[in-house]
Image (cartoon, one colour):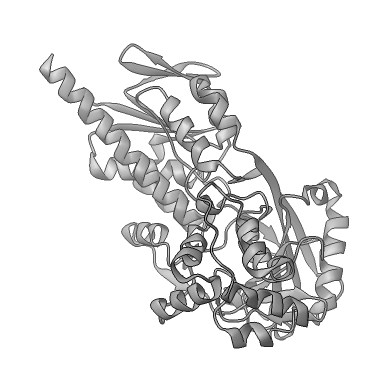
Length: 455
């Protein structure tokens, strides 16, 4: 009899898990159950001014290869971003970010010349070159390391907007080893973040593009995964209530009916997984989440030239209603955009979720007004849309690795988790998590098969 694996959650992690399982063992009976009316999770689009735009991630980090490799495996052609470089929001306007690794300037000259810091802020950051490494080996917040090495001003104006923004988090709460462990290695190995950043840039050389995506847009990935898995195996609008052991197998209970499975992969947010698997509820519920949103702005024809030739900019906490912005028509130019400036602003995140409670028109007015203050665009766009993502970003707060380890250790045998709550929040990390979950499922099924054969 074919062995059955049920994957709960039809986002990219769940779909990639199913694909990896079927590619390795085509005889498996794999079913994906998704509560929403479409698969793909945050890999979604929204129509604005007659243009179909990404409402979630717009690309993959190319230097994390898992998503790009999966696209190639599925036959998807990859496109490189049309612009490089980015800006930071400062009191002087937008200033180009200096050459850096993980936001840390790579040379003393770059740091001294960057106008976004005061003279005192630059001198304090240079103290990184002589300050002794921390001896304590306990978990530390990302912000604690940055402030100790570079000072408050450089942390808040230069590094935190980038690194904290990737997690929609507060650097003073994010766990260093679970987010950017390289920084700790730089401090210990080079005695300086600046020297570590320089070594990292030298080692990388011309590592190619920073961002890639399928030529048809990011949403081509979940569509290709569904096609590869088989539409009949992906069931939408199906809400799972619990996943419980039943003898050597498991029962997946739905609103109406149930599935019996030899293994189950729960590829949902951690708080949803806690409801589904009570045995691991405590550590899963201990992973906090914040809400985010995307404001899509489309301007009239002839406005593209107003945008700098860059991917976008990041914003220090509290300096503007947005946390970052992407110049989509520069980063991903295309015939469908015409000569219109298209900008995507990010709102929400840790400490600023209250922005999302405002009406759509107020959010659009605020972000577009602030945008026009630093870029020569009209004060209001021609078309706009606000997309909210409630409880979308897991927060890797200090002690995160211990919570993940506790959750995995308390899962009943044959039940596994995958997704962005555990080992990275990007699309590439979600695919890596899916690959690892599929490997664990296969090991579990192989062990069960061996036990059965011996019996």
